[in-house]
Image (cartoon, rainbow, N blue to C red; front, side, top):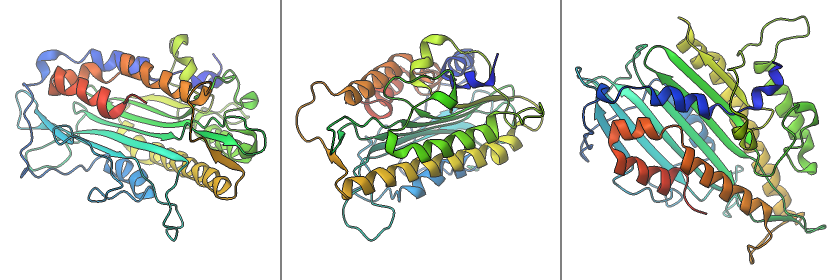
Length: 341
């Protein structure tokens, strides 16, 4: 099948892989004490990179309230002294990138992450093919934008990143600008994911995607091989620019921390560039915030549908329940990761 089908969703395969984790692999969840010291090392550079771009400070009022019982959790791995540690972050107010303006970046409404890492009893990341390491990072744009001239609603994509390492040296990677409004996702060349005024940024995204997910004209293999078929019902939420790959060779972790790292930075940087461009148009009066009335807003409806789809079909649910218990997992999914809009 053509590599252009890389737009298909990675979540279904991730879900299947996570569900296959045996329930008896982990002891019952153990809550972290407030005095516990935990550090996150292996995929921490992915986790911190985007948050630094957003000027995140967990002591700042910009950080939205993650309930204390959900900020972190710890589950001991049965038969060892290791633990799978969870770190949850959320942010709902954003400063402009020039750092001189006192007003907020209104183009972005929410960012949140769930980061899981297997750690030794000395709080170091366990670099083992049998360890669990998971990063899920999502940025949601505002749903209430319209063109000042035409009055048309402006639909911006959601940024989504999943980097998953599972026991058995299985590594799954999905990076995407996920569409809120339906698009033609069969061919990247004909897709219209961004509003017309940001076509130049969509062209950049096309080039970045091609660099990692497509081979050259002479028939060489792509840098990151296509991850394989995904059920068609999930296509609605993924774009032709999705990077989706599975790694399982002896160099898998190195590939994630080098090639995937490069792709991740480029995707994050471009999404922030898009948000800054939208914000400039807001400041210049080319775009307007819709301050009243939610009826007939296809962008709002699209994000609500996305959140509902992910709440019901979240691929991490089986693993989170096994590690930390059903109640904690459901509260996290419903209240922080995919909250009602």
